[in-house]
Length: 350
Image (cartoon, one colour):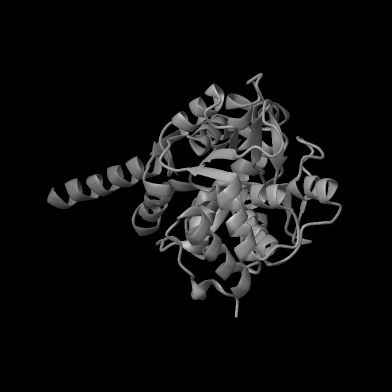
């Protein structure tokens, strides 16, 4: 009888685990840009997955604790999926983190962009006031080059940034958005879904620049068709007559590639038995006219890279890391932005 009870308990336990809902872990508070994106995608994905998706938010400093928690513990569960974002990619380059993209299998990622907005009453030459935040390093690089021009050394760009940008730390996402709406900040940035929700409807705002869409095959960035002719490189050349180049620009390319190239990505551990089911469901969703129309209405038209294509995007990004670009990234972060960045020699592709 005891063996029978134990056998039944094991069967019931296995059944319970197999029928459990999927959990999508987001390293942010509710209402954050990645949380909003996850809610949009999960709603459309669940019918193709055939199971319910629960969103679990794990906020923390610079959105690192949630990803660390997934790496160290949560990924052991076969029905837990990590939703990482661009800020995690930036932290991976320059901070001590536990997570490592090489340890996971890509379910899929949306090859996205970030849109920087500016108030319509901003006048050329005015100082930019901008709130610091997770993943905003590429905006700092881009605005520095737009404000300061070509052919400067890294040290000169740092000095120019300090003169022309007020980098406001300590604001939450909600505080940042309210401050921009009130005019207390004249610059802001959002992912496509959050930009549509928080900035596009603001009559006092306009698009300032975007970073473009990563083309992993050519290791370059293309203009975003959702915001044509607003890519940083296009605006820079229009203003100064030359394309951006040099060591400072190379560091910018590195950090924006990691931030935008893996801005919204779904991961599971490498041997997760549900990986193919999740990839197949995401593929089916990406081909469904109604589901994609619902997503594009709130996010914009962006390409999905699923399974092997998501893994390939990660692998190509790793080749972008060079010693010089990484050192200059850390230098700008520490001396201009006041971030506790570290140089991670182990990231250099030998």
